[in-house]
Length: 89
Image 1 (cartoon, one colour):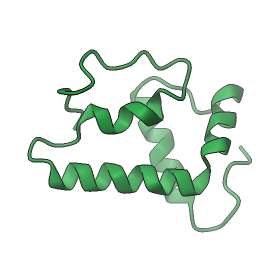
Image 2 (image 1 turned 135 degrees about the horizontal axis):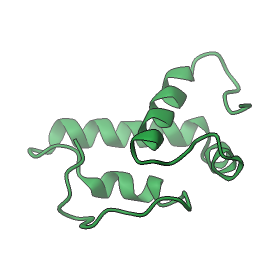
Image 3 (image 1 turned 90 degrees about the horizontal axis):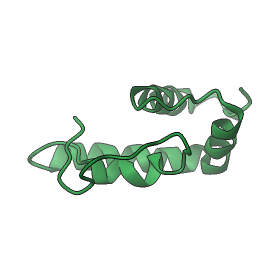
Image 4 (image 1 turned 135 degrees about the vertical axis):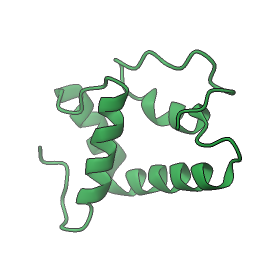
């Protein structure tokens, strides 16, 4: 798919693809691959850092507001019903 340019970031890409598929966003579509390429591995590492910290420190779990900025990059994303109070996991 020409996204990974090193030998150490495959886990970040795999997690990101799984996350996108959970929310019915196809990571293989040309426009989505371009969005992912623009975000890059450093952007993904920041995303997963934020997800991990929020999930571990928030008493109710991972809030949707943490995922919303990333997922809203994709045109096929329909959004969460309640961005502030929604809990994903």
